Length: 545
Image (cartoon, rainbow, N blue to C red):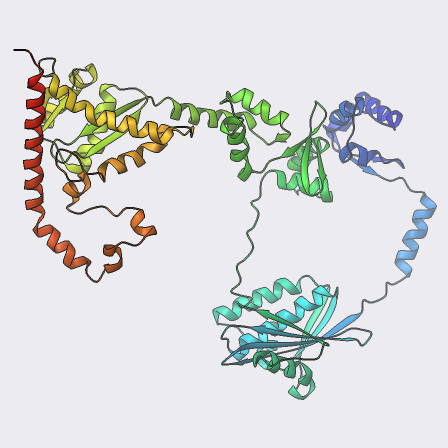
């Protein structure tokens, strides 16, 4: 086989202009085409396969002229026998308890197959007749019939399927579409109207199925379906990709009509092989690489990059490791680089900007990769001004990002008074650090031994802080801001009183809370002043005069 392949390669090299300009047909009795396009090859045959894949070459068997003439004569003179016709009698019945379908299949040999189908759904008589026709077509398909004649005693259904009557109802149009789709699977089919007297067997089966009567005889196949054929969910269609025509050529030998695409697919085909309904790509290193679909690309990359054995590799190394694991898909480097870039952007967030409301102790926080004036201004605008309005006063430390020219000018435009903590008032500095310390401790507790990203855990920590009573006010920040306590997840798992009473008593309870909110805030303000006095008194004891 290598000698024949070498002969073809040498011919191509000597006659390269002709092979580039015209499609070439190679006549050979050897399985050269199968080896060059489908089978797995190794050694120098791989090199020759890739080289020949650049040309539009088609391999055909070489047959004797006399034998071909005899074959053509036999084809012209001998008419093939007609396929045997299956007769199918169908009928549908509908009543208050449901829908019943009766089908009787009669094989060319005279053997009868009886089928009773019950549908647990309220339908009209016409819909039941359509269901009977669909069941008959499905049964004929299952027994392997290619030519069928369907007999029904419904004038409306038979004439609508033939096109004599026009179907205007939306559901009837859906039935006609389903029948057309299923009928296209047969080489020949037709439907005929017969009198009711000639359709007694199917009529009896339909009535038995509709009335839920017990069918004791084993000659009848009984089935139950919960929904109508037109109401069944269509199976998800696979998205077409650039690999679809390549799979069609590798498996079935079909090429697209576009000549340029056909030539390109022929060049790519020697690199691929289809085994056990899975597409593989031949690797230069030897083993086959499994093709990964678009839906599975992210999982493969994330598992290699940040899974249990992940090392957070770079883009190029990540794509190479995916190949070593036995996977391949187009644009591997781009997808790997994009994932690494997202991961690095998330990992670069090392700072936390926190703002605390002086009275309610409500906290707003956002992770940042760097703390600059622009980032601080953007944070204040998005998390403070756009949510709660323009604040009266902003107290911060002496960092350059809080007292630069840009943020100072911005605060002056917004009429926001800026104040800065100093070494002269260390007790004030300590109060500003309490919230930061609580958030950091909560983050450490949630991340301990789990290896999670602290950015992803931050919203949960903020929610826990906002729903926890504070020492200074003895109220939760959520209740002080929104005049009611937040609904916790435990109240959903183990239903609380206010969840059970909603909505019958909710409006009344809410109105009472709004009437008492001013008193609640006054008590919180008194507690906060008392707490400040205790802190100041305790601090002054340790300060030398």
